[in-house]
Image (cartoon, rainbow, N blue to C red; front, side, top):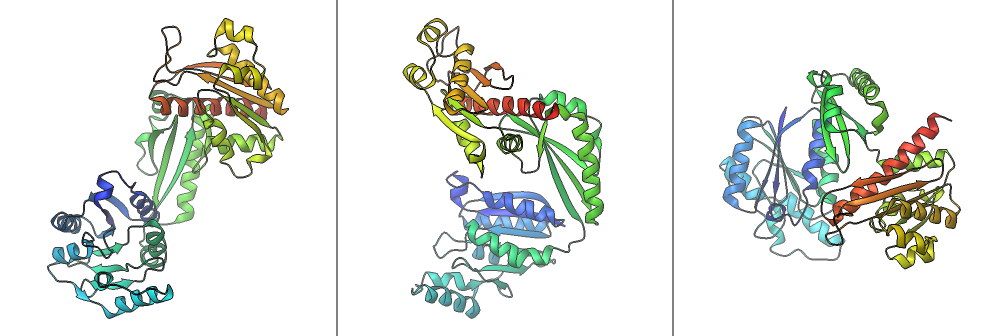
Length: 413
């Protein structure tokens, strides 16, 4: 079954709101065998939303629209669908009673504007909204199309979709299963070279992606029998992982900080970090993990030379000789925070995030990351991007160094 998602709202086009609904719906539809061929975002304009519905019904059997079901004059989704179907909206007593009950439970009275939400396409099935006022609708199109109108707020859309839409789609025959193999430290060209023949596979299929300093490969299989599909995923994942073993750190929803935390926890090791140019980004990622107090002892943001001397014990002589942005100072920061926290490992990061402060010898993007303890090293990076991007990439490289060190420790016992 071919599907199309229509996201309605001028605020989406202006970038004021990120469209998380389309991603959520695409993932859910793929899991039950619906191939989403198109995603369309359209502003609050009756003519354009109407045309979006007409186009969708010409090319897809399943159409799901989100947004534009509220009580204001720019909530036009119901009216646009009616125009596309050549009919007029009608008042629904069922929908009106649901609205009144919602307001009554909250000791409120619906206004005349709220009555707009009780207008429906003739013959539509009403989908009760358990979290808000705007009911959803299920409409049968002229050629057997299945059209669903869902509210825009995710906390209303998700329970409505899972409780009232998904059950009717769950037995669609073909099922799409996906898995992600995640890796760091490998160039895209090398990944493509090592997996070149596997990319030619029709089922399962492979697709490479790059994001936030790492790469991942999505493996997708279409099947009518879930156990067989899972078996095919397992086989392909094994082939991919064997070819890229030194770079693979996890799968599916794993993050690098999760894997680093798990390795520290399993090895009963502790960590402390001292950050200059990253401003606490590394500590933030690590402490974002539930249970991080098992392994994370201390984080210090030491921007000034004085704080490096006072809090981390970096010597005046070293700072004068090498400068704050240097391999030796990164090592001294890592050693200093490790000693202060009495942790098994320490990380020191220093660099120039920009946009000012660089020179010919030490340009913007120069970063040093040191890991102290267990044979950790100091590495130099020449990073690009704006200030925030350089900070994120530096924190990512620190996690990569930690993961590589801990992984090798685990392999060698």
